Amino acid sequence: MAKAVAEEANAPSKKVKEDDTMKFRAPQTLLAASLDRVLQVVPQKTTMPILGHLLVEAGSSGVRLTATDLDLTVSTTIESTVEKEGAVTMPAKRFAEIVRQLDPTCDVEIEVQRSNILLTGGRASFRILGMAAEEFPKTPEADLKKTFALSTEIVRKAIQRTVFCVSRDETRRALTGVLWEITASSLALVGTDGHRLARISLPVGIEIEGRKEVIVPTKALQQLLRLAGEFPDTTFAAKIAPDHAVFRIEGTMLFTRLIEGPFPKYQDVIPRNNDKRLVVKRNDLLDALRRVNLLSDTITHQVRFSLKPDLLVLSARTQDIGEAREEVEAQYGSEEMDIGYNGAYLGDILRNMESDDVLLSLSTPLNAGLFEPLEQGKDENYLCLVMPLRLID
Image (cartoon, rainbow, N blue to C red):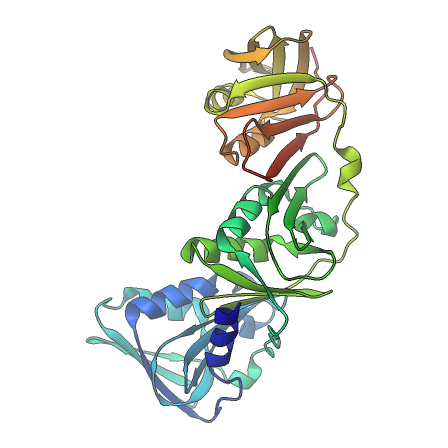
C-alpha cells in the first residue's frame, strides 16, 4: 500500500502547464506498451469525438496518458525526458498505430505547437492534428488515501472464474457486472446471467472496516485482468466507494463507476440438498463435450447427460442434420438419470476450472446442478450453478 501511495505522489501533477507548446521524448517500447494499456478503454463508436482521443500530459515527473469512455477511466504514467511541460489530446488509434510501427530501438520525440503534433522516431516523422486538452472530460480525482491492498493473483483468479457468467442484456443492468463481497478476511465474487452462476471466495487479509458489496462492470474487470497479467506477483491498491472504485498498480490508475443494484439474492438459488454425486476427469469431459457439441442445436446447445453406474453418456441431436454420442468414465453410484444442459455453458465452466477432477452434484432433472472442483485450495470455495434444459425425446 505504501508503494502505491508513493507512486501516486510521484505521478505528474494534474496542474501541468497547458499552453500552446509541449515537448518530450520516451523509448518506443515503453510508449507502445503504455498505449496498449489504455487503448482498450477508447470507445469504438461515440457521438463525442473527444472520447476517441487520449489526453497526454507532460509534467516534471514524466508523461501521463489517459483514456476514458466516461464510465471507465484508465491513466498510466511513464518515465520520459520532458523538455517542455504541457498537455494535448491525440487521436488514440492513429497515435498508437504510428508508435507501434516505429523502430523499437529508438526514442520517440513528440513536439506540440498549437495542437499540431510532430512525432519523430529514427528517420521517420509524422504530423497529426490533436485537440486542446481543455476539450477532454475532466478526469476523476483519484483519492487513494484510504486504500487496501489486493494480491494481483487473487484478483486475476477471482475475475477469471466469474466474469464469463455475466449477462450481456443491458435491460438487466445489475447482471452485467460482477458482485464483489469484501470483508477483512475474504473476497468473494459472483457472476450470473440468470441461467448460470459462478461464485468464488478466496482468503485475504486486508485493512477494511465492516463489509462492502458493490457491482463492478465487466469492462473494468477486463482491464483489471490485463493489468494483473502484466504485473504478476504484486498488489493493487484499491478503494471502494458507494458509486465508484479505484485501483492502482505500478503507475497505472483505473477509475470505474459502479453499477447500481440490487443484485439478485443468489444464495436463494444455490441448492442445498443435491445428494447425487458424479465425479469425472475435467479434461475427459471437456473433450467429449467439445465433440458432442458439434451436433447440438445451434440455439439451445442442448446436450443430454445420461448418468449410469460409473458411466456418463453425452449425446446431442439436431433434426435433419444428425446426432452424436460419447461415453465418459465417471464415478457415480446413484439412480440412473437423464438431464439436459447447455453445452456451451458447461464448456465455459470446465475451461475455467483448474482441478483435474470435477464434482457434479444434483437432485432431479428439473433442479439446478452444481459443478465444483473436487480439490480446492485452502479456504478457497468455487462453485458453478447451471439451470437444466427440458429434454425433448
